Image 1 (cartoon, rainbow, N blue to C red):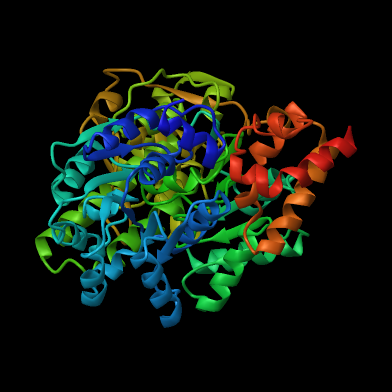
Image 2: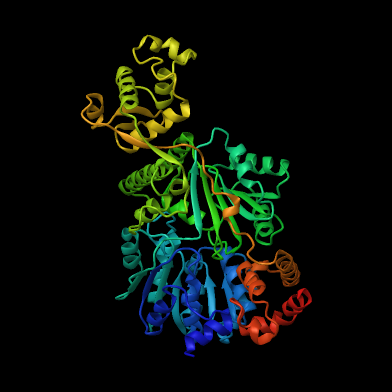
Length: 602
């Protein structure tokens, strides 16, 4: 067995590498700089941890994610690897002790927050260390054109340039378009880098978009039968987080919350409760989750539409990290678009003082919001839409998203489109979609009557069509550019450049209409293909061990590893080593206790 495979088995418990891992490791071991784009759950950390153990010196991992540093150093420690982290959570004594241990060569891997690169004393200390490799996690944070630009990342190149002997530089991210990838290479000054994009597809994730009248009722229905599952519910605002969390607890769910309005203590406590499985549901703004290494999240619900595809895919990707099937549901409403626009226009980027660049970034964000809105209204394969956004070609039927499994019918809506466009024309393109729909459906609300719109020829001509159906047709006309939405504070519907083709009957328009909502059946999720009683006993033992060591349960063994134990039913230590995720160190530390549970069950 070669050295890299021996390390993989001994410390991480795996017999084989996942797609792309071995290729990346081989390039790093040949002293090549690397930029790798790999989806969440593809095993990015293995790509730098394995070579770090084979190098003579220290590997520095720069990560913006304090929670991830703690989780990964805990996981490495439990696997028998000496690792540490340096960030703002350390006391002066803890920091000094970590530095002393590093000077003695105790650690092979040290995680460092990018803010530390602003500290002269830190730089003066580390410049004298034997640094074999500098790894940049969440590398898209260095690009101001990415969705999570962090000014502290711009100091990384200065840190690398401090060393007389330049270390190998490896950069990893899960979400980066081709433009952002080029910017990462430029900003990090990667030397003739090897670039690998393994693909963005997460085949174990099921995607669906719904447009419910009552979001919370839909959420409640979705959560039926999921009380023992771990999940995240994302909301756009703190207020919505508070409301949803309170309602869930009132309905008997164990939920907690996370947003920037809470104290540091409460945010930390609530995060720990979720990670340690003391509560099963986290309701949060996008302030939560980046770097959370919790492997057993089985669903992610977006209660509101996020502002761009990158954010959505990153957040949804926190489900199913262990490779098990998971659900990603997005609850869309038109109000989400307006809220996101407001947030884009009123979120100041303090790091960017150039007005022209600030304006360009705002326009970029608005364009991304438009593409996110199209995702929520498309009738085509949702997985294909996401992968196409990241530049990946794929088939247009995945058989694992709400649109592919929905019961659609293709309908000629030319007449309906003419009526809608005609109404927009007759109100002189001065009103929003809601007013247009009210006029078409013959609403008697005060504003319609006060404006005299009940005298228009288009008033009430679509009274027999439901508001939901009308909104669906309008959304399609917007996505096809027959209708433009202009104005920010008060969005107004105007005629697109191709609207005349419909009005003058020069072409027909066909759209897909969903006959019925088709959220994936619970039965399609194979929750247990193993004995539930044994699985429950193994989980109880794992929880007890984790509690004693004060680490999350998945740090001991993941759910996927426990399930493999149930399938293989090892009788001795040799067979226990054949379980995926069991290495030599974990066999020595935990093997006897888990084998005892399995033997007693048999």
